[in-house]
Image (cartoon, rainbow over all chains, first blue to last red; front, side):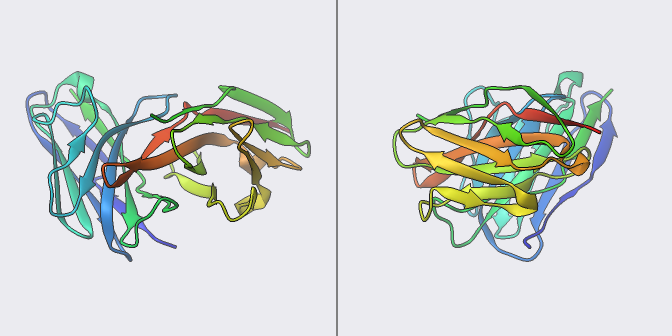
Length: 118
Length: 115
């Protein structure tokens, strides 16, 4: 099956620093990648939709200047949390949809990145 | 606008008994519907998806779901629960918006399986 990787799996950083999370589709090309945030015991909250070669579309309430998304190729999207604060600590998950696209296109999820900001 | 409601935050069953996880959706158009499972410390995995080809959809690990348009429901069932089924289950609805297909997640249902 299609595999999506995320790196790093865990990161601890100091308040005020920036952290970059990579999401890669390993064996397929993805026109669309999604970035989610998940708090403990809660559902996934969609942060933004990223299409290769264009600007990401952010959900309401998500600061685009704080959560920088780059989808430079059909297999790589990055999320950079800038000037991180403790309240940004969370589990960040990416997913990717294959190139064929379409309404019935499932998403393939990465294993997630646990961010802890001290 | 689309939305999805998972009616139960927790479902507790005994091993070997049937499982029912409920999901109702709201969508402006004909949506696509998915069930995903999240085991602790693992990525989300697709259980099954509704593609309009058949209203009864069979998925992995013995799960199935029935699309009922009149009831706007897509409940997930399994005849006999196994201990390994204990996990978080998410119902997802997706519809087209501005050229992309945007997913909306339900709040999740935690399935607890007792020996």
